[in-house]
Length: 384
Ligand SMILES: [Mg+2]
Image (cartoon, rainbow, N blue to C red; front, side):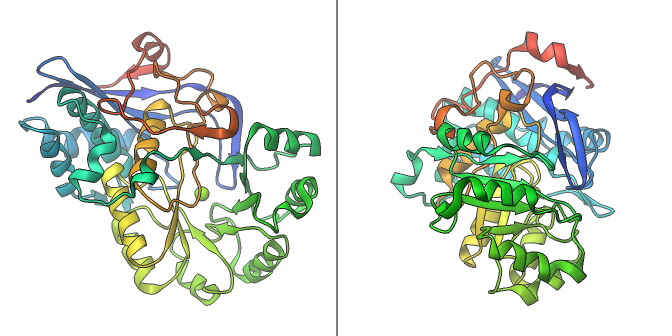
């Protein structure tokens, strides 16, 4: 089966409220969508979220690399099975130029192809674990997942609001912080739940998005440890990881922007910094590359969570759920925020988590989603 057409779209959906962290504030998506149509009319959709402060990509540069580097490799392929498609991407290398790793471009194309060929060959994308011989415990595949609540920076809420989130069903929370190191937001949250953090009935993580200073890092780690915070994510900018190895074993540090490529993961493991990786399917170059990084981490007893990019639509949410059903031992889950953040989502199927922040595995052909093209046309510009 061959591809008859590949379309590229820039998607800008407004957020219900803007989202701020230490390195960026956004009020709409800026996503790179790929639509693949096969000779038999099967359609697949993929999505990447290029961010300069993450992989170095912009919407424009990732579009150029998608068009000129990744698409020419696949457009004349003839896949005779879903396995052929999975193996094609398993062998496809990341593309790095001048320190920029074009992983969101790679992700957008890979998801579109897995979705289209999955639909054609009647295979769920969740089955790629079988093709790649990743052993998933059966009970893991069917287990429901509980997603985390992530607060934007300076998002001060009342005790009543925090309790409402708990009643909704959230167990795991994450706060964004910046160099001001204002703990009042965290203390306010902790006061709402008193002993529940100590007993781990509730967990709290903190993400600095690389905004902290080396000189003050030990003090910040001590302050967070005193408050029973589970881990500190990306304290320093990418490139300063070596400094973190001195805290190994004493404090729990998660790496996010530091781990974009396979090479980044190999280096972090070899040099022994960071206890947990934040894996994000767009940042890490698609489902298959992210699975490879998770495997590397697992082999070396590094823990990991499933993260997401701000403003993902139902396409990346669906990919996240496939990842979650293939990969065992994921510490925390982020994503599937859909219309909790976006004014509208573009998938016909509702990919936004509901009550108790729970989701179930997806087992339909491809990514189990289709795109409402009327809604897409409202927010997207076709660029190729
Ligand atoms: Mg992060």
